[in-house]
Image (cartoon, rainbow, N blue to C red; front, side, top):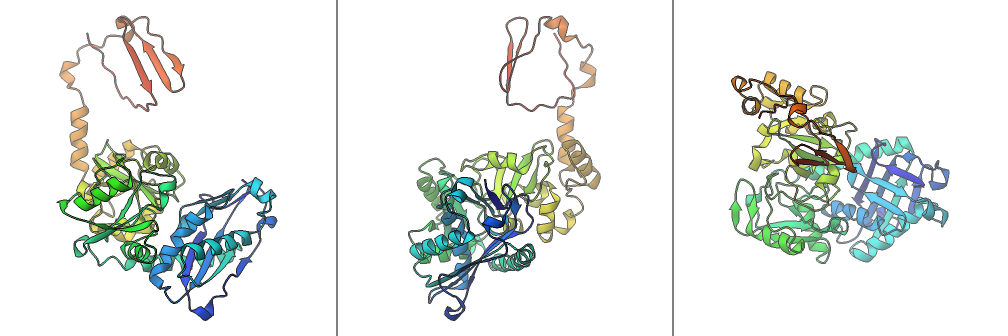
Length: 444
């Protein structure tokens, strides 16, 4: 890496496409406001705002998000340049090799975007790109971008799945998650948060051969978990048979797949039979002891992984938010950075009952908090603890382990593999395990 822009170390970064009038866009112009690549220190991280103006007879505001989402796709066409995520979560790296070979100004990036956008989207008649690297200007654009994103997201809140016959799909991320098919109904935004139902509809209309396409929802198979015959058919076809069924509103059995661009991760916490949620901006470990990056590897890749789910921010405001799993009544924990962003979505009666890392940093403190606050999961937690506790009257004597198997000698036979030979030929193999044990009782 020569330098990187955005990413987890930088607070202010964004990319934004704005539709303008024909006389407001200087076609082909690329500008860098602030230091350019040659002025940055090798190996460091910097803020960036990538602002693109587009114009054309068929260019409408509804297409802004559609065009914006393709920045990710087109930037990754450039050898030696990495682009991850979207909106305010972008993360760009430029390699030393490409820099030394002549990719020494951001203007090359802008010229490449212009060429690819005009080639793939001929309805764009004029396009202008401006990169802001000056920290103060990046922060200003970041604030403006957030307002634009929020206005886009609010458009679809009054529309319901039941009001339409067609959902939309997106396979933009199949280059690195081949089995992933993003289904976008009115009540569930794309995992990346960049595409709602209106955006996907506009994209499918202007670019029929592109990554967005209509999905006739077909017969409703499960109104609670959100399973549709038409959705299953298309997902099966587009994933080449890897995923045959999808629950749009449940984290279990047939959860929606995830790529890698999701804004947040939902994860199951078996100790409380509830869910936790974390976003990319959270730099610590979640209540389950895992940071965002570790869970992202488990969540992404287009594989249906029960108990892990990639989610867009706007989904928290959906009336169908995890309705197949109990909805907000099952939300047990949320990191503070995420909570700040979706505070308005939390039901009033639960606002003082859902902790962040400030009130509960591990499972033990989480249980205590939920029970003390009278969370809807409190009764379930007591049930789980009662079921796990052994009957005291049946424990009469604890035999030392040495008396049962005096020759136990733990050995590590391979990385991450613990082999414990015991008397009588018993072998216990633990692979990649993370185990917490309060008590072991061994009886003859």
